[in-house]
Image (cartoon, rainbow, N blue to C red; front, side, top):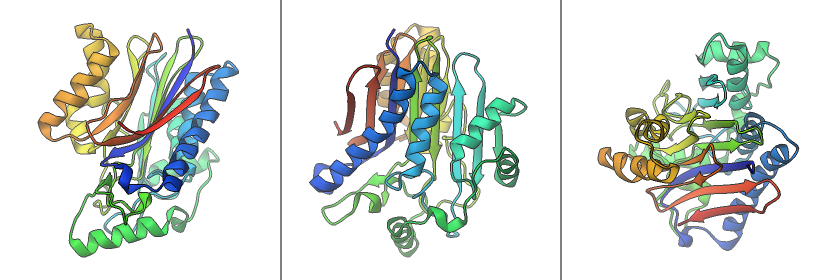
Length: 317
């Protein structure tokens, strides 16, 4: 069994005309850097849990993606971040939501999981827990980028609430400046011991209501891992993924209907989500190391790396 890592950086209407060659190269380089970290852990015998933690940590540190640095603005001009992680070998899980001062929400989610008393902590309670665990905190302006601010200002001016990130990119639009990008990030992995793990993180949707929580920190909706089936991380219209329990549904179709990973992912992403106007995609890896990265939008930032093999990144279909 060859360990493998897959990552995503959001889905949406991503056209070749929207990105200059330099911008496109920047995204590929960023995705490759993220894959390097997780691949190195797996090549040295590390766990799937450590690999997805490192990958999402790197995605949160990169302002190209809507998680951690570069997160979108709420309607009130603040930032509220969410993250989750799950260990497929034990079904242990941890998550945080609506945090405003944590540099890396995925590390807080990991600590919640390791503490074991709870699965999901929110707001001030999650931040106090993270500070007590010694995790880095940041001032509100840490998350700020000019592109996200301009995006928020347009949303306010046009009265458009709850915008996603990667849609409607035009020749004049910067990749970061796209008004409706589905900007969740995530990672899934299989390690040499056959264990699976998944992690997901997001800044949410532009101009969202304060206190809004999407699918990303909800186990079974935006993140799920079970050694019997698969590890899954989702990105897209969060409310629809919540209603569909999209991540868990992939696992359930495999376990209860004996579908392959590819078939289960196709049913969820190409049939069940579109039936309720759910747009986006997911990444998944099963217990045999098969990887599936379907999306029902024009593109999804994504990548895959196996130990001892090349790192592959992609944006378009």
